[in-house]
Length: 272
Image (cartoon, rainbow, N blue to C red; front, side, top):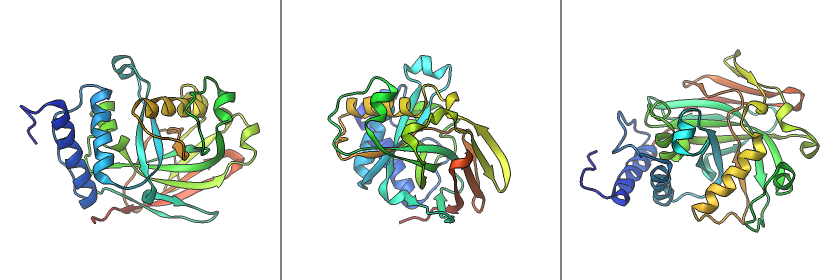
């Protein structure tokens, strides 16, 4: 898609329209549909327009890490993307939901801690873990499904990732983390297996300032972008064991030490 001669607003709308259409139709994009955003401000301009064009309710947001040297270049070490309500699946113990991805595009599964911002937040940004914890009313074990019709979404860098909903395509909400308020979330050993093979193992201690830091980042990011967060939301706080690429038919298991596990299989997105 050529965008020469367009201003930044027109460019953002053109890219947003292309991504929303591709996602609705479950159609692969062989190339980025326009000029790649030069910075995060341009990326979020595209994302914000795509959220409006898509029109679905947003139940939460994913937070992803921006690694060096891009973090210094872009002035941020995390990025955000919306999680639409109809892509969220609650998985009771023993459930193995099928989570659709864009076959031929990009697809990955990520073990994540899911923190829920309680309704009624007054907009005051917290400055530490204790203040952030006080805003949370639930913590769950989860798997984020990262998928985009554009296969190069991650390889092309953080601004491209952010522009297409942060590369999110779904969320599996598992069981509650027992006694979460009394736990150090950064000490939980998390394992991800794909088809029974270990894909990664780590703790959230490797993730910048941890899950509560991810919440602080998101609140600041969304407030600056003008979103009303008073109704509460889920925060998928980041890929603890890494971004593990998957293909349709595979089984993903995320285990959170003695606290439980979440499972899913990888299905195929269908157009609407």
